[in-house]
Length: 108
Image: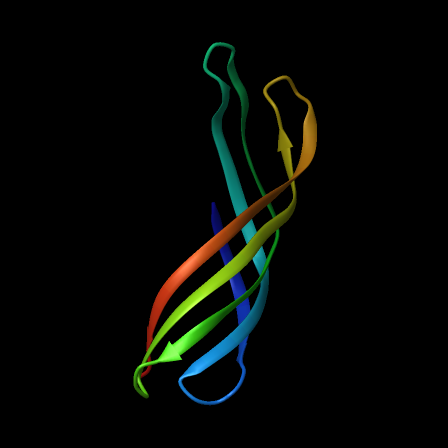
């Protein structure tokens, strides 16, 4: 999967501990290579592109003015990717992911 999004995040409150929310939109490309059941064979070998978007929330803790630790959750989706199976049938698929992230931010 390859995707690019433009994101916006908002921090709430003041002090070292701050909750945040964010969202983003862009384009995502997904690829299914030799997808199927090993005993039966390949059912899907295709790729497609669709609208990608995400929403998320979390909390950050500032150790200093430059260094912040964060813990967050993100729901990611690529909408209506049109894929064609080996037998010729096609369908629109939503590719979704739930992500839990731990990160370290450093401001210059």
